[in-house]
Image 1: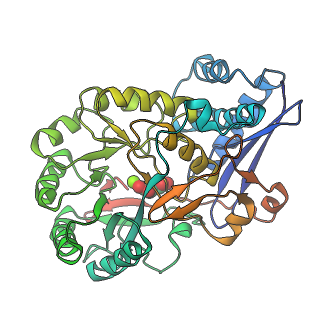
Image 2: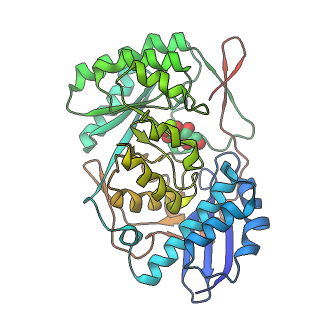
Length: 405
Ligand code: KDG
Ligand code: MG
């Protein structure tokens, strides 16, 4: 079964997505997601100029060899653009293999380890009461794990909070230049304990909470936050600090028993090797699109399982439904699956482009036994929503110093 053609689509059904379609000479095709938020066209160029010409005529079944060829064979290893390009091809090849075998991808990985996939939903509020009202709505829908984010009083904009009340799906799209936000750890610390104090007062200990710091804190500030939140028993604290220096997490780990999660920006297993091996984290949040596809995430999951680290794949709106499909198969299979981030299935335009048949019930997602990844892409509909240049925000401290967004 030879690779006959590879098409790359960039569409903006509310926000930009890069979708790859690998077609074979048998008529079987597969889909992959190559979206890097705010850097979409770099991946398109990487694929069209450097990847596609090398793959035409190769055996579509050789998933591992093609992965190694694109990774080792490039000489320039790693990096978000390279790994998103590899990821999209890899997802599409797994989709093809599943369709050729008439089996869902999770069967090729080793079969089901569970009935459904536990999700965590987002409650983002303009203030603590607003966040908790939204959490209550999600609890009523059956979600048992909620991410709580609340606006920080005194800061103009806070990560994850819908200032203009738009849909979260649209929040990070369609910005022709990067907007600027500000950060103050002191102002954040004045709010954050109250958020969890009031959440536990209102909901007791019957649901789990997570919180995304979005890497705004230094390691010692993260350690302090972890200590302050210990009594509220979070499922995890996400991206407490940057970990380009993976030793940062040694400091945090020594000081707090609040469970730690990280990994949504990681490109390879090397970015989290020390964190996992030294058991400095509890959840690894790598995404199929950004860390090299199903082949790479399977390897990370297996490695993490030896060290009691669970998987919690990134599920933000900039990961396309093709990535979500890849995660569903990994999540159903991985013995050490923890939880999947879930922000819904996007707007109507997106649902027109991508067709799937998941069922969400009581905070769990269930999938069908459709062969391959079980997702379809409408190429014609995609042309109705052309690419729009768009950026994520940047962040500055109050004195103007550029900081981590
Ligand atoms: O592109 C950046 C987003 O994916 C990120 O800001 C979302 O942190 C995020 C999350 O946990 O979903
Ligand atoms: Mg995050």
